[in-house]
Length: 187
Image (cartoon, rainbow, N blue to C red):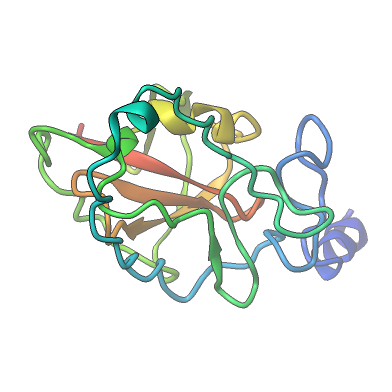
């Protein structure tokens, strides 16, 4: 038994996630136990677009591209490369999907941020999950990116979101993916 555990750890945590290789784990440059040294850098927002002509304003908006597989074999979810490059955190402060009013309604998370604070999920689902007496929920816009999370055992690391007030980023150590989460308070 000990030999098997040591062998699995020696392979860099390349276990396959539930449902296969679709989201994370198994790639040497995403997930597999890597923990980013820091969160993403703030996005430099572009100035607001100039007023559109009436003809252009009537055209339907183009569908938003939500593809994140920046290399073959990478997950179709926001993820972090092992060189700590955050993929998918580029929408900036004006992204309406992450607008919260009021911000910090349940207070601010004070359980620790970054790689020196690794938490094991203790239960729940994307609507409400917990660890160490702290409760969170995943942003509805990010629900699909948490489909492979193991809510009763995955390790996560929480980072502050430099662009979206009221949100944090929960990074899944096994998968190498992350989602926006809102702090719901301590129990």
